[in-house]
Amino acid sequence: MSIKKLAVVAFGGNALLRAEQEGTNEEQKANIYRAVETLFELIKSNSNLVIIHGNGPQVGNILLQNNAGAKMFGIPEMPIDVCGAYSQGFIGYLIEQQLRNILPTKDLEKGVVNLITQVLVDKNDPAFKNPTKPIGPYYTKEEAEKLSDGTNSLFKEDPDGIGWRKVVPSPLPKQIGNSKVIEQLAREGHIVIAAGGGGIPVYYDEQKNLLGIDAVIDKDHTSALLASQAKADEFYIFTDLKRIIIKTEGSEEKILDTIPVAEAKKYLKKGIFSAGGMAPKIKGAVSFIENGGTECTFLHFPDNPKDPIYQTKIVR
Image 1: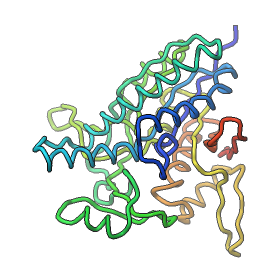
Image 2 (image 1 turned 90 degrees about the vertical axis):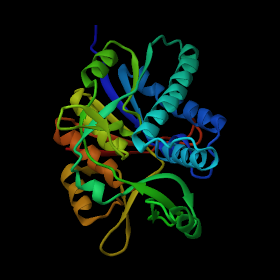
Image 3 (image 1 turned 45 degrees about the vertical axis):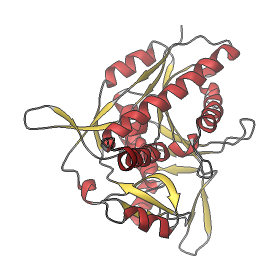
Image 4 (image 1 turned 180 degrees about the vertical axis):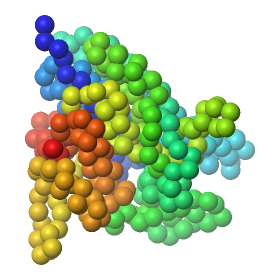
């Protein structure tokens, strides 16, 4: 009997809710169904699966709903960590539901487990002084200024000029809660949905009590850490980019299909990739490989499951 490989797969929040969409339940269900369909080549290739999803657009919308409820009805606002837990629950539920809908059509029988996951961070992480993680929908400059007026909210322009988005602190993950349980369930053949949105950021106070903290951990850093802690054989990151393209010193465009780790680190040092875009994905891939992984594959999330899936690999 062959030993199945363990694959960690990271979906971006924007793959599950597109920038041009309103964010309805039906839109997200349809997007998730298409995303899940792309996983079945992995399942058929004899891999056990851990799925991690982003939550940038969703948690941003939850915060807006939170704020509107407080202003209109006096409902107490919940902190970002609690809103992150909300998003973990509902996105995980939708992914689990679509998996359970698709599995029988593929003659596959697997358990599907959705774990609400806390992730330990350092409360003194410098990220708390420099918010960079974009969440929520895109706004015009005027809308962003109006929303930030009289609040502690910070908005920054998207590097691609799409619009302005709220940004929050994004500390590095230190330890995945229940990582051994996640690995065990996955290696037993269950599909595990865990650490959604990068996990709920928590820290230990002086009395060693766990407390939540206002932040959103980048799911690519969390995915890389979980892949390493679970000793995953394969690490996949879904992205909305068909190709990773950079500009050379001569201003010519260069398509990156295979990137050695040393080269990827040079690009990161030069600031080629944006902090709110590909940089955390590249950093996550580099971290996974430097902690024992062989390679990390970036997969373009297609609008149509029949379309080709473009790949970029970061290798040793």
